[in-house]
View 1 (cartoon, helix red, strand yellow):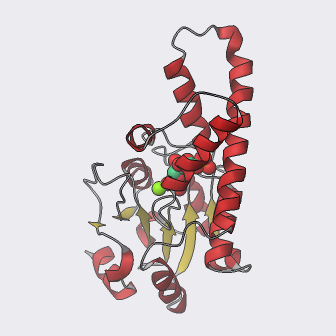
View 2 (cartoon, rainbow, N blue to C red):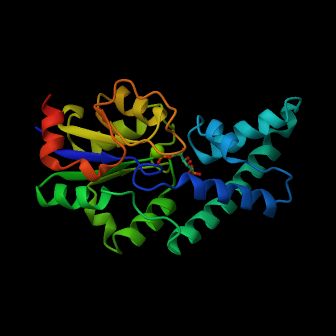
Length: 235
Ligand code: XBP
Ligand code: MG
């Protein structure tokens, strides 16, 4: 029986990666670094889940001959960059820079009205989730979700299943009682590794990803209703 819907955030609830990219480039300028990520490069870098992890990966790629002694300084630089980036991103989201993708709010409302539980399973940080959902749903947004897994309580990033395992434990449901929603192959692999059936809604940053094994791949959630989800879930 379908009991809960578990939503990824970036690229699934909202098309946020363009703004994340803008925020990273802002942080590089603030730090006086001559780094600039273009869209194509960022699409490649999205293979690394997690903003901090992505920054560390990039630092190593542009500093192949670094010495171990620099490790502490690099960690500090990455932490500073990620903090600046997150502040810029949060502020822009609170100013209304991104909206939920088509069909997301309607499906969430219909699901809650039909007694299904909602949950979040994301790689990003709590401030980013709060900014997005407070703007889109309102100050009581947290009450709409029975469980929220994010960078603060599931530090091992997708495609590792940790965040989905944590959310299933917090929901108290089996994977078989839930459906996940994702936009990327890392996300699909994380959900699948946790035993979850997954509906994928690709976006311009992930359209080229491999979504083999997805329950369904759809352009967006406008055609996805709870009866249809129950039908797919039962198949
Ligand atoms: C996708 C990610 C995130 C964002 C950046 O998250 O990999 O890291 O790109 O956000 P999701 P942070 O699992 O929601 O698709 O800088 O906050 O990590
Ligand atoms: Mg995503």
